Amino acid sequence: GENVEQHPSTLSVQEGDSAVIKCTYSDSASNYFPWYKQELGKGPQLIIDIRSNVGEKKDQRIAVTLNKTAKHFSLHITETQPEDSAVYFCAAPRGTSYDKVIFGPGTSLSVIP
Amino acid sequence: KAGVTQTPRYLIKTRGQQVTLSCSPISGHRSVSWYQQTPGQGLQFLFEYFSETQRNKGNFPGRFSGRQFSNSRSEMNVSTLELGDSALYLCASSPGQVNYEQYFGPGTRLTVT
Image (cartoon, rainbow over all chains, first blue to last red; front, side, top):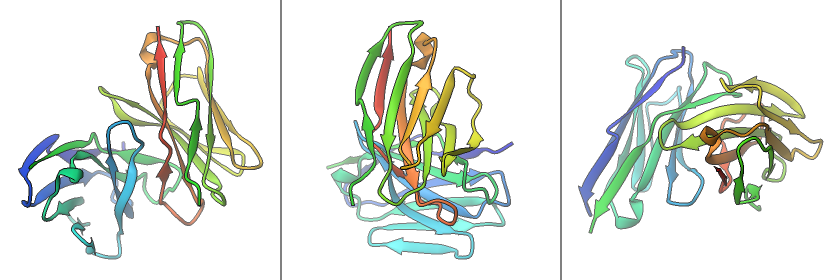
């Protein structure tokens, strides 16, 4: 069945350092991989996504890389700031279906000033 | 554009009661998905609606149901509430068939006593 694994479950970094979160998925037909940030008391916010026809995408301090052969994708945050502290979720659709998305268990990121 | 809105934001119910939660998607979005978020199980998919039709359903008992209206607003209902139904219920809207991006509302925090 569909499965999305995410590591690490918690991550603590010093302000200014980089943070990397990795996810693996099981369905080789999946073709869209979003990342969400959830702050306390709020719903998840889409921060970046990547489609299967590209290997990397950047948006300022955030980047996502995709390795379709290995079925894993990663979120990279550079020059971390305290406001980056949140829970981050990766997700993958079931195959190419847009009606069901499977979320990873989440990574709690703490950026220490 | 206004974001996804959910009402009510907080709700306290007693075991055995039923509850109805409401979600208004972003204007123009035709797909609405519902998720249950708990500390132990993470983000779990409940169901997804597109143009008033349920396209997919997660692995939840029949006590959980939903519907979508012609204006794309959606409601979910939980009957015969159990203590384990206490959770944050999130609604996400998406443009629909050709776009995976999901935009989440702030959620409804349901507490069952």
